[in-house]
Length: 137
Image (cartoon, rainbow, N blue to C red; front, top):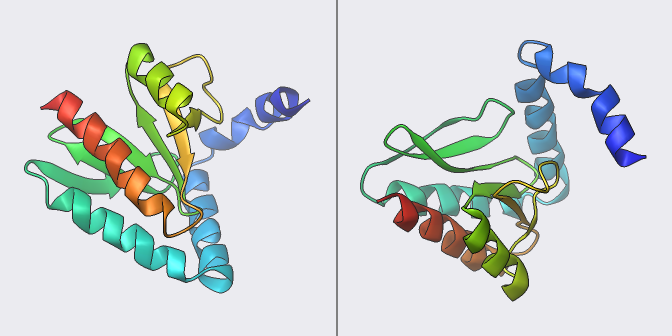
C-alpha cells in the first residue's frame, strides 16, 4: 500500500520548489517539537565542514547536502533523516551491524538511511558520513 501511495504522489517532485518548501515545513516542526535537534544538525554540519575539500549545499529533495568536491557524501533532511550512498557491500555490512537502515525509498540501491532521533545518534551519523567521505578520498 505504501508503495502505491508513494507512486501516486511521485508527481509532487516535479513541482518546482515543492521539496524545499516541504523540508522547510519539517524544520519548523522540529523547531516547535524538538528544537535541540537543530543544534545537533548544526554540530554535524560543522564536523563535515572541518574535513578537507567539503562543502554543504541545498539538496534537490530538501535538506542539507554534504559534498566532497563535486560529489555528494550524503544529505540530511530537516526531520533528522540522513541518507548516504555506499557500494552494496558496505551497505550490507552497515545493515548487519545495525549502524544503518535500508533506504526509505530506494531499498535495492546502495543508499542507506539513518534517523538522528537522540543526541546519542549523532556519533553514528558522524561515523557514517566519515566512512562515506573516506571512501571518496
